[in-house]
Image (tube, rainbow, N blue to C red; front, side):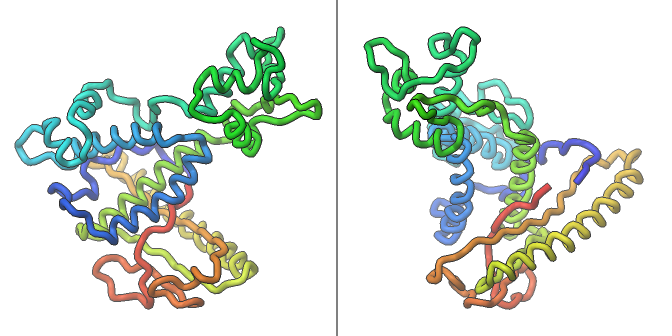
Length: 330
């Protein structure tokens, strides 16, 4: 869907409670967060984002959010208060707050994953390139002392993981291939971003962030609630799911195209207004998966029945299915 201009940063504090969080989080909220984390971690592992990288990133985000959204009225936000709110050590809080601000929409990881480091060294280190500057095919293990191999490539960076385990992952990801002679070669283009990865990553972050912001706003009971509903239905065949997907894509795109036309007309009308600094996101998402027989239905949702998550304040809509299950596509 085309847009008129890049989205500005979300105003600080949107959808966040003004007071400090409770000391003991509600168990159901913790359960819901864990459910949200499962597909996130699956994506992170798929793109080589390791736990240490995520831990550093999350630590910085905790400090940033606490500073922006949980400041007390007419009181400066101190490192000690941020530590109290987040559990991040005060020394780390001080370092994070004094670091230069990152550019918008840019995430700087503390260090690349081991796989990325191995591929980068294979591409750049003269010892692992041929006369033409290309990554040379490598034996798994050197036959003579000092011979470069995949094993020396990995152990030259870290001895915390077995080279065979990393090789299995790189082979599975299609980044490395094994030749008939047993040597390993870097797949051509393995270091080049795939297709429109930059654009896909941008929409992944923007859409998920807005969806979670809306759901979090509703979860805290803030007013007015955002429209945030989903239809969930199980006990279906693959053919029925395909029919539903096609129909949802048809009517969903009709809705988005209608809203896009309306939004462009309103944006043209608002162009000269001084208060025209708000943004609006409307999303649509689909997801389907084959559930094991024991998982069919789930709590409060008998097999073969539908559930729609009602907005706060709405009457119970059939078998309510609380929680957010995805992000709207661009």
